[in-house]
Amino acid sequence: MTLDFLPTADIETLRFRAGVLAAIRQFFDQRDHFEVDTPLLSQDRVIDSNIEPFVIPQAVGGQDLFLQTSPEFAMKRLLVAGAKAIYQLDKVFRRDERGQRHNPEFTMLEWYAVGTDHQQQMQFTEELVRRVFELSPVRQLPTAPFRRSSYQEAFQRQLGIDVFKLDGAALSEVARQHAVNVPESQAADDRDGWLNLLLAELIEPLLGRDVPEFLYDYPSSQAALARVRPGPPAVAERFELYLDGIELCNGYHELADPEELRERIRQTWTTREGDPPVSSRLLQAMESGLPPCSGVALGVDRLVMLAAGKTRLDEVIAFPIERC
Image (tube, rainbow, N blue to C red; front, side, top):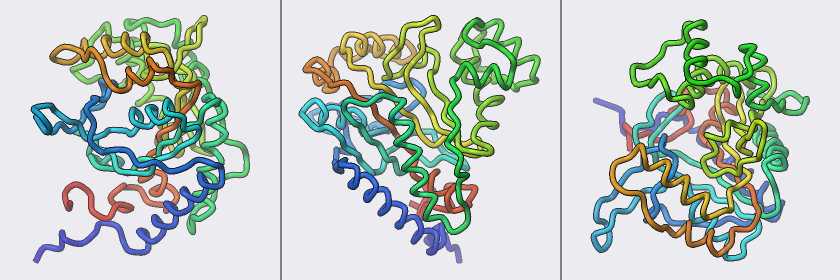
């Protein structure tokens, strides 16, 4: 008799998880962020070319709908409507993401605050993560402040290179010198591809090993929906938080220029089939005026996993994709 009807997480871990979710809501409520509830289905498709959404073809009136990969677009529309500080704790969905630390359906915490930047959000994120770890029966965080390293500093520290000055050919040589396993799909002239490969193989595993660590100010070519600060070098005002070499969140000083957003959508669509959308509800909202703001998206399952002393997401999720 198979037992695949049972959860992969034990009941005590699920009880701990419930406590974490309650503490997260209390944390935001105490800081005057109110919880919002946006649709799981969207007419807008994710812009990031590295994320593939689930598509429901011809769902309404012959139009495709997408399961949300993040509530970002809808939450920004609420900021345009007048919300000042909001958060959402909900399920999101991403195709082709399955592994020890991935599940196609996962729990994301996302929040935005008007009048803040990515530097302020790093401090806010640190306070939130510390609050969660206060609940842990197996692990406490060091009292030292979370480390903050710029993208450039991290490469200099680990590899001794000024990564902003290297082109694709030079980066490929760095990969060769460090015996990095290069996938066949890696194009020789894809500079961002080489940057991501070196980051994943040589930098990320060492981040947040003694104390949680923020990596901030990414290359401007990797801005996604973050603002770009002029250089030299020009950098994207965004950050990620790492603990034990595991990425926990992604934060942006948010792009507010609709024309720049339109151009980034066009550039992203060069890697996809079909024509880019000529409009979207996010574009319409930004044309109405997105206020200066910052936002963060945090993977709750990973945070619970680390706080509970587990090594696999399946140990903190009741029913992963194979048992849904």
